Image (cartoon, rainbow, N blue to C red; front, side, top):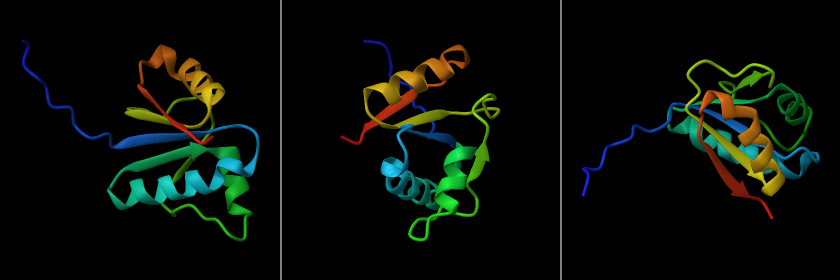
Amino acid sequence: MPPLHTIASPHQVLLFPREDGPAAHPAVSQAAAHLVERGVRVFVPRQLAVQVGSSPTLELPASVVAVDLEALPDDLHLVVALGGDGTLLRASRWVADAGVPVLGVNLG
């Protein structure tokens, strides 16, 4: 049996929510806070950051970086797709050429 290799924890994560509006915003806000508390640099799509920023009940940690989806951040370690099958497929297509792994979180 080949030896197991230790994989370092991801330090740069993009949260990729479903597109249908604010349904995923609470999950993104909670995930961002959880990751930031653990020293992870978190990226979110710029459009999402604007939407959450205008919400009276939700917020993103100040260190979260809003990015345009046309360009991947350098050294991105992981994409977390928050939604359903369609979100996972969109995220996978988006990062396919970069070889960034995608973790799907089903929000129902």
